[in-house]
Length: 270
Image (tube, rainbow, N blue to C red; front, side):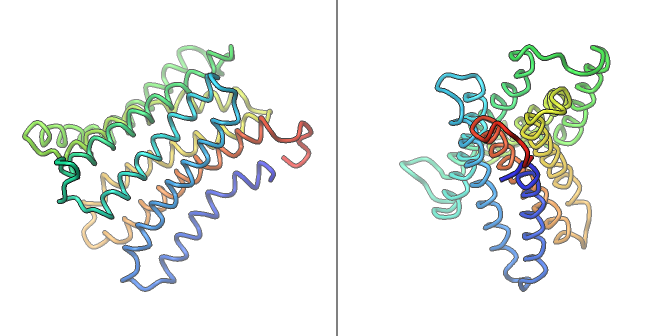
């Protein structure tokens, strides 16, 4: 499969989801949202593991991709746990809602480590990022500011709830922290993609950047959808579309990374 076909997959995947929203009856939307959520996370998990195991054991990039894969796998496991057992039940004496919060926290920690490793890959490889040092710092500060601006208020509210004894808020706190840290690292990942322009490595890095940007947009819609009375359904569709794009872009990035390592040396079909 060519790189262009791989890169087009997220758009096809999201378009299929949107088409189903309009084709299926309104009462089926909830099931569609759940199915899209789980399937998209499953795809992202597969893509990241495919990329990870294309590298040799102990390789730096194998660790980076593996942490990303475990993030999606943990989130998928959490969803299946909540949907099959229910948030009010207990497992081995532990409330499912508390266990869910711990899993989400662990998943976001895994994501933060994975993205941080990927963000440092340029220095490990001895690459020089584009632009002056001042320009690079400015881009990184802008990305960090956007991340805090979008998820910072939610983190404050959710942290207060957790400190007040609401164990269910552990899920939200972990998600908020992961969003802020992961989204703040969009800049170095983007700069790495730019530094690799012209080569086949541009594809996985560009798709990784796209995934992070789609997650940024997903969080942005999550923040404003509650202030759009009468448009909750439309906002939910937009939010879930960005989730589908983010997960599918991660899947495509993993496929592209694997193709770089195991595909034909002659890249005529790129």
